[in-house]
Image (cartoon, rainbow, N blue to C red):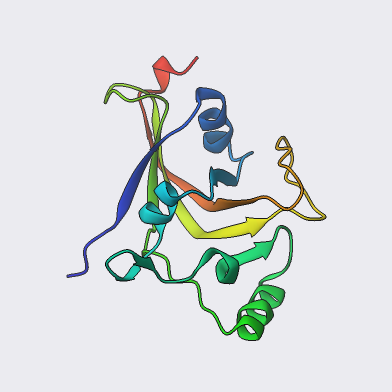
Length: 144
């Protein structure tokens, strides 16, 4: 039986509310080594599959355009099979949370199109978690 991979990440309460309501379908995380280790697979000790320059796409392009970029660069994104993420509004177990189903996780580069409510420097990269649905919620009485 395949092991289910679920990742726990902290999130601000206002973002958690927007995810639960269905308004927020993307969550952003910095393109740092920390998140590369959480999301990416390794080939061998110290080396990640899918280097950032290969796995990076311009934000807002279609899936077909992304495949063309990968073919052109001869690369392939290789992420852990994360199908669900538990977003928790704080660190203790009694804080509000939502378990979401993940459509995909990828690195995007912001060149021409910028996501709403985010103003990254032009050319910067970050991980984007694309959320397909909310599976479960809890402790919402503590959500302010």
